[in-house]
Length: 267
Image 1 (cartoon, rainbow, N blue to C red):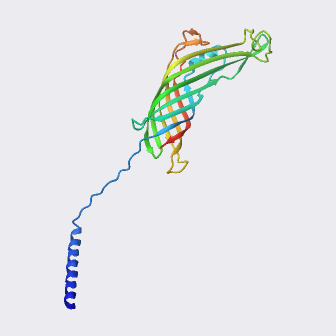
Image 2 (image 1 turned 90 degrees about the vertical axis):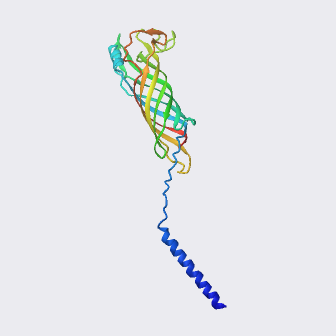
Image 3 (image 1 turned 180 degrees about the vertical axis):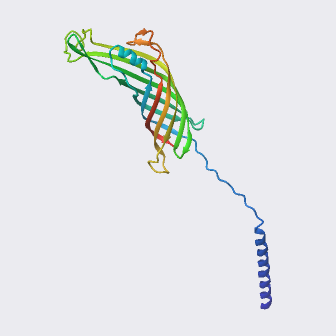
């Protein structure tokens, strides 16, 4: 009886062995398809605001022609402008965000001293510019947390040219406000223009992992270059009287560079 069981066991062992060998011979016939797993690109997200510094370079040739003829020193560019920028992602359209910008700044001539009636007077000119714009940007991913954002901004602004002359060492009087209100050689004259502007540009933004790679990005650093195209309105003297025949080259158009940072949530 034992011999019978032994023979049956040996028979099953050899049958299974031959079956496995036969299956091994057919393994070479099997083919496997490679599946390429594509990493899903996460749409751009950003909401926050921050501080910006802009170097604005309008053409001031006509301005300098006017003010030097009147005895003032020349202005120089760029004009340093500072302000804020806020951004908000539009969830309906991937990678699109809206923005609001507010910047302002000025440049002044060196003081120039003149002798009038044996008394020293100082002349200077200040050119100031400020604008508020609303824009749309589209984000292209260059690398993790690094984006290229072309966009366009439209809004309104104000340019002002202020010429002043004051006496050195003026004394206070009881006849009015200030030291020399009745002195005909003391003046403060303003020429201003409210304009509409369009500003196409492109920015590069990077959100460093300050809290760790697995944590939200709360800061973005930004570099920007663009060109402001202005559509000037009427020039007004001291904000009231319209001034005609102002040279067309006096405008708020020019190249601008910006650097700054924003605080919020970014990817």
